[in-house]
Image 1 (cartoon, rainbow, N blue to C red):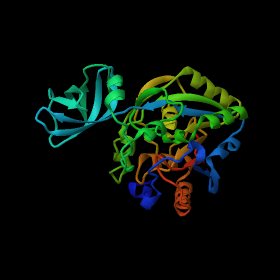
Image 2: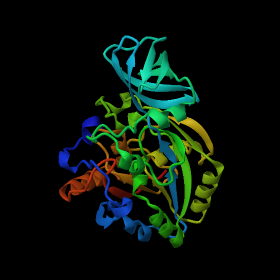
Image 3: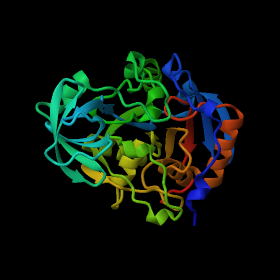
Image 4: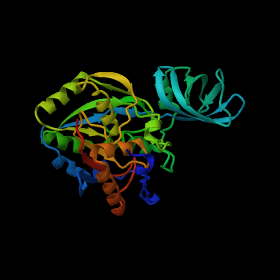
Length: 341
């Protein structure tokens, strides 16, 4: 049985990528096939996939979810929208010297007022005066991850979105998808690699480390996902043909595996708190494209479950020694599942 300390490692700070590379597909790719590690370029993924394989992308779009504002008392606050509940209501993290009680009015971006509603765990309900998505787009700022040390600029607004982002709702990018540009997608299609989409709105909880040594005591954050029937049909056809389902990112993985907890993958929408740790047997996904993850994170546990704990430890040690770039703007891995159901 693994515990939290089994997923710690020391990362030199200079390996945390602070900015994206000039070209999306210009990153490096570490292929992990069992114990075998191969250094590649991301463009090599075209030759590493076979005709008939299915790439499953997460088409969520990152919201401009961060606001600065003031309470009626003049106290400063920072709000990060975590989830849009309806066209005028959100759940948000609110940082302030004193938590605002229900009924408090907050001025955001010196542009409009929101009203604080009931608490929902660590989140505050905020009621917006008009369409949430329009106000976020006009007045909000892009919420870069906490380990990126600069404020988001116009370049980030382009590069911290996938080229196929469609459905607004995330507060963090599905970063494995950031490596794909239109030319690479065209090359994959020309090879006969097919694609499908899921939507999982990534929450800020994706950056939170696990804080309990006993992993069974961890309270997994929830994320909303939806999978359409067309994607289910594509997955089933791929499996029937003996080809491989390749999840692009841990978010696509969580959606696919969450919807596969019955006898087979099913279409639908739901909240997932699926916590994947070593010992989990994967039902749908055969290969995974993913970036390098934070120490003690649930995502590091997920990839360890998928590709094998010892294999991932060796891969991370190799990546550090070879100066791969880490985290959201960093390099990628292509993993092969070692633990199918």
